[in-house]
Image (cartoon, rainbow, N blue to C red):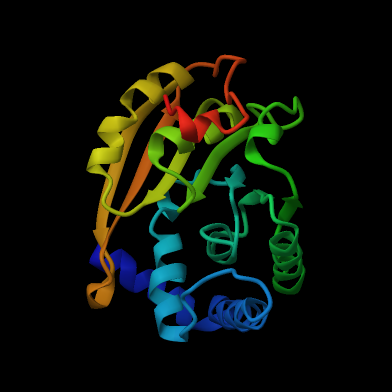
Length: 229
């Protein structure tokens, strides 16, 4: 994993991808003065805690995958992934309009293949044009795993993947076993990594969609959070 992290840091710092990461950081810093996108504002901190962190799950995204991201916010992990993996096609779901404006501008300025939808995940999951249409659904720092899986699983087609970016996740993984069973998911990996400079442990949780998600999910009206599976 250390060798892989060095390769990712090289992509963040050098060549054409490095130029795009610098342009993304400049745009992120500018917007962050007007919209609360991130509390991490220093360039070096952003490089490790946002950019590198986002790339840790890159190898779990199949070539040419159609991906939906839930709660995109400042564009993590989606924007770093698109910078290094132009084969990925992203739909970004974000409920805050000002954050959607930022995401659209980032996609346009960086030449990324992304569609931005200003909707709530539980609404989008009921849309026949979005439900079970994606190879991958990913999310970072949105909710605990049992709640997050209810938001995300309905977007993934059978045979696809749900990828969650977490910190220390052993407790959440155990807590989410029932939710995974109900929603048609099967855990296939929980890859742990230590970020450089003592920035903490990360876990990439990967689940395969092995059966259709029952039509009742997501339940909506906040039940995903107030009464998690």
